[in-house]
Image (cartoon, rainbow, N blue to C red; front, side, top):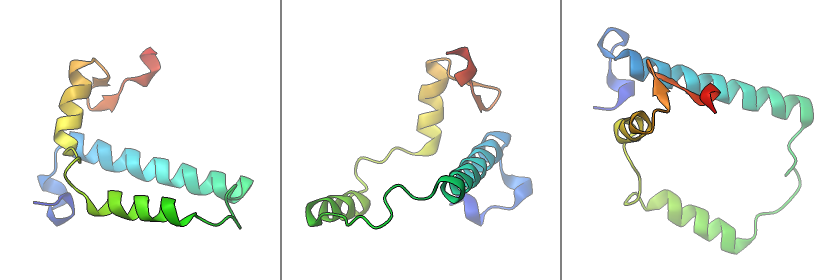
Length: 89
């Protein structure tokens, strides 16, 4: 079941934290772009890059589920109480 199909009462704290981190990062990115502008504005994407990007988006074979990423980060001691522990480094 996709996280977007769940009720807020049915998601885990870990899932909620992941959603909040994504929202915060998106907001920061948008604010940064608003303040600084888009450094790539006006540039064209080469056809080779466009084709490679489209291929990557269509090929789902190398994608890793979120839960597996969290487990691997926990093994590396990079997640504490549902939060990335980046301040350790």
